[in-house]
Amino acid sequence: MEERLTELETKMMFQDQIIEELHQVIYDQQQQLDKLGAEMAVLKKQLALLTQNLTGGEDHLAPAP
Image (cartoon, rainbow, N blue to C red; front, side, top):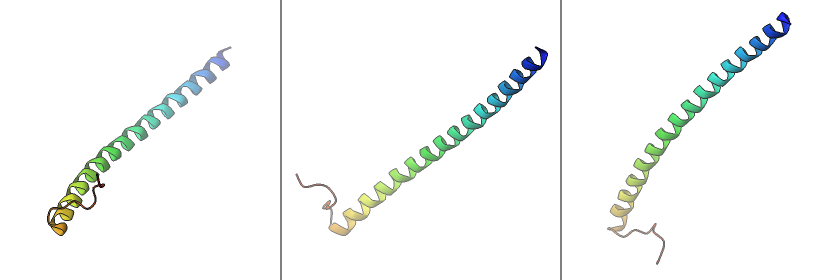
């Protein structure tokens, strides 16, 4: 019985460690997504300004009505 309890405790500790590692991976990925989202917003603004400058204010990337 003691051996079985020790084995279960060991498995539980291993699972806790894996859960913590996965949590860190998810957190890191969310940080990357947030950063990429911010960078994409900046690029969209830059593209809009560049398009405006090249077309004299007409937005050729916008869909026709």
